[in-house]
Image 1 (cartoon, rainbow, N blue to C red):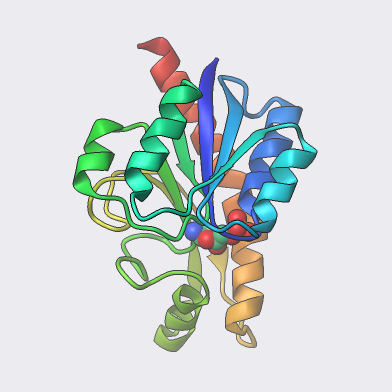
Image 2 (cartoon, helix red, strand yellow):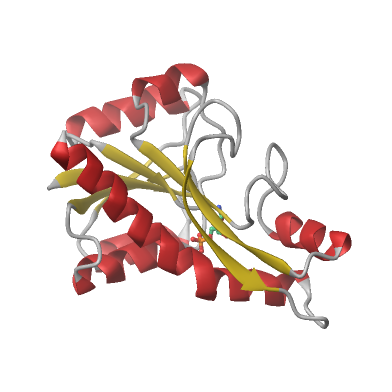
Length: 193
Ligand code: GRF
């Protein structure tokens, strides 16, 4: 079993989906070993503690050095960005090539890239008038939302959607389903090597 670190900044509903998937056996080739937040009051940390997962908070200016130290001391092999609001450098992503994955709440390459996160993604989708949106899990490289795609799932847009209602449907119908599945795919891939 590979040791997984989940990086968070907020509520952690995607972390919760991973925790549930581990319990249900959907995520079985890796184990949630560590949750790291760059915000000390992120609710995601409470979710981790409740389930006995080690936590760490990184607040310094040398975020990547802190992360690396955390990963090394916890023997981390796979890294999942689940609402982590920091962009990682090429140096860092190259060190963990094909071992870092991210969830983005649109069908990449639409509505993604630098500055396109959170509710802004859904606002942009509604402004454009798309009738289908969704979520994407992809490998992380130095280009924001630019790495190779692992899984995607489409979600219908309704006439009366607000950014908030669309965000909720994309989470429930896509993000929470594909993130655990993609985590299992990547863990299995590295277990076979
Ligand atoms: C999700 O919409 C995810 O796609 C994005 O950030 C949000 C995190 O939500 N990258 P949560 O903290 O998992 O609830």
